Length: 111
Image 1 (cartoon, rainbow, N blue to C red):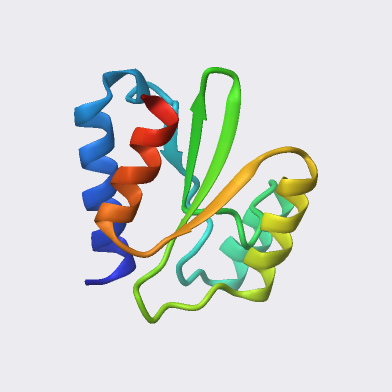
Image 2 (image 1 turned 90 degrees about the vertical axis):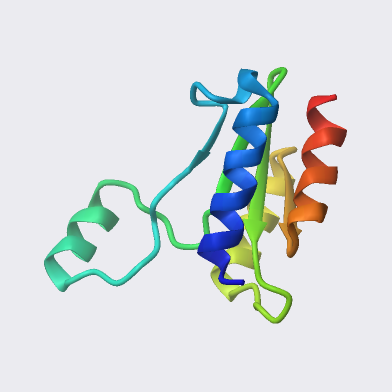
């Protein structure tokens, strides 16, 4: 399974299981993919930051970062730096590799 398919499956399950997450409380920041030079410069100038987790979850006043990886996927240096910076701010970050792992994480947070 690709990271994109895993993310789509996880997102769909979460917003269908927990309607409270539908309206901006679980979301993706599109900061990856291939861009031409002009787009890359514009995105960087407007605040796109490499390494931001794939999904951001806001629940009961707390923010969580969720990085989705395949079983063999590796976390980049930029992702590690963002996770460390967020943890210093009290934001929990998680690396999730399977749908079941995602489901357990969300159930433990949203209850």
